[in-house]
Image (cartoon, rainbow, N blue to C red; front, side, top):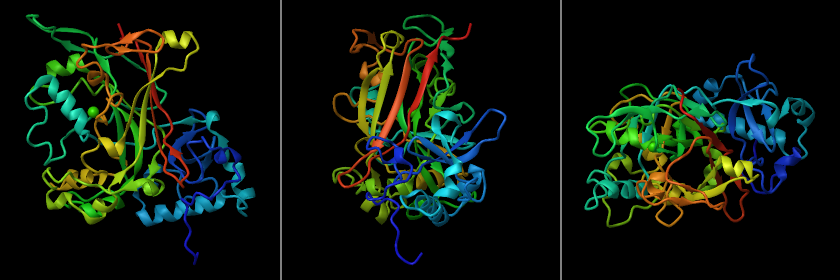
Length: 424
Ligand code: CA
């Protein structure tokens, strides 16, 4: 192609009619990648969401391999070129329609898997309001520790228990020490919580020993997902001193099925600015492109549906509404630069969680620990029920979208799961 082609142009329409609906999360300007199979006997294959359909991009000849791992290792320029080819094939009037249309499937007629194999999962703590609000519960005089504004705080999480949206899980058991009790007991968690986060999926990795400079970080990021870092607060309180989260977090992490690419997110970037009174980032965390456009505007919501609401035919309450840019103290590029500065090698499909993305205002606290101020003040729901923490058969759904005047709104797809009763 000799003329520039903008796959994010708001004027683009698709011959897939459902992709032109104003409220679809998956217009032709999005084209997120995931994995699907028609039945459980099939291997997972790479697919792209368009409207209410999934396009088998390998079958349609738009991708060289059915394996997501291969796509992730492509240089970013090749991933971009592939996205543009898919956009051209799906746009209104495309000559490829007859060839591509047989490879479209109804999204509700296939099984969606985790978007990729994840071997390593690290969880950060970049939500400064979350860090302050939870810190204040333990340290009213110093909610933020002195390192917070200098170093992106994180820990190594558990990759094996990451599961795709729609999979339920049993309430975890663990050691809980009640206040005043002489000894802990093994019991089902009574303080099960969600954490609204985003996941950063790594594309090309780096060799061990070679740091990824901040200006190159975007080359190594495939895209973003929604992530629920389920947390058992009573287990966490007892076990986390002094080394941090372990079994309170490792029983389940839920991920949305679609990787929304950095290319699709490009129209929703904005400058990343440190308040002048804060320490400026050390040079390895300070990049010019990151200053100009390191922040990404994503509106995020948490919906809670109790079993009683389900029985009453109610879809649930929106209990959190916040945003990535307003919550995050560090950018995704800073996280990649920091993670690798010591020579740690990231691998294709590795997952970085942002940490809980609470905003500063009312209704923006992104976990129940914050909403209920440590389990002291119940959250009142629209049908008269209350919650301090999650009950059995509660369903938590994370949703996210980007919108801006003059741009097509794009969405992430639901990240949902239901808490089941603890196993006997
Ligand atoms: Ca977390």
